[in-house]
Length: 123
Image (tube, rainbow, N blue to C red):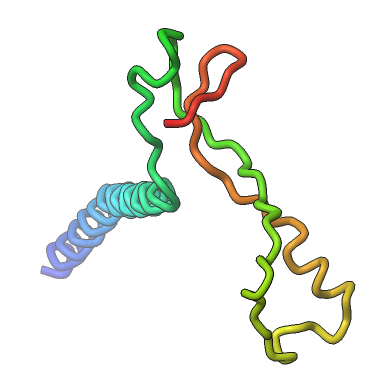
């Protein structure tokens, strides 16, 4: 009877070890698929940030292919009109002029244009 108990214990141990080895890689693969789908969701979220490209169909004066591209917009340099100046509280100004100048020095707003060849067209 002792050898039968040892054999049964040995068989259960081997079956458990084999099942553990067979099921472990499957659980690893399912975790990777979950992380890939999470990365896909993050990529979709990032692609939705910002504005959507306009339709450039028939916007390039018979030039083909007419494609939407993002280009830096030109800053408007219109100064205040006479009699319409507003006062700004001093709390909006930086104490150091170099800090205030550097805060927005890298800011370059982008806008959409339709591009064909060497020409840009308004959408």
